[in-house]
Length: 222
Image (cartoon, rainbow, N blue to C red; front, side, top):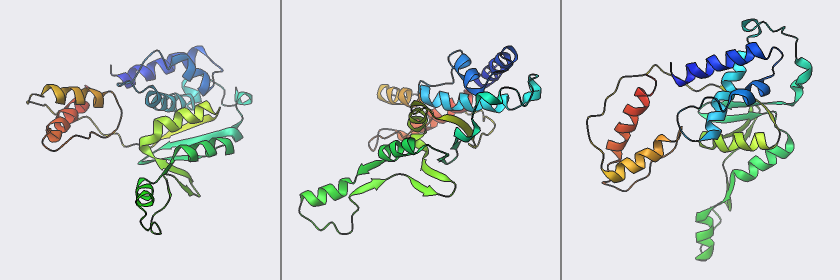
């Protein structure tokens, strides 16, 4: 049984025991029992929270009255945290949104360099904003998903996770090479995370490391 199956089973067991459970209660009860691959707990939280929510919405699966427990949650205060090629945040409180804007705003290093060298800066933005306001919500980089999720929870947001990430069937790849010690160290760090960027100099063997990571990721679900 893989990690996902174990978690789904645990969520089902918890829902049966806690007849009036809310998503938050199920999440708190079971999040530490099983972990997904990797050490980024915030990323694990996002995935696991979404799975709890998907199951708990199936009221007939655990004998709960669809109207039961609704008084425990104010639907007007629930925000949507959508995972896609980007992160889409909808229904944020104003204070939470301000903190997210601050997190995703930074000084432009090219502007600072040009100013320091007394060059013309008319074509450079003083700050870079890695978010965008749209009618669908606040669009943010997917690479910041873990930090954004933690920030939203820290601000007391009640979160509804919508996981639209594409999940394909595993492919049975095998790696027949051998990593050098430095490559093995770099790969070990990459494997701890759900996503990220491997940056290394020319000639360091990024292609080789990439092939090893692909093989490991595809075999993980077997």
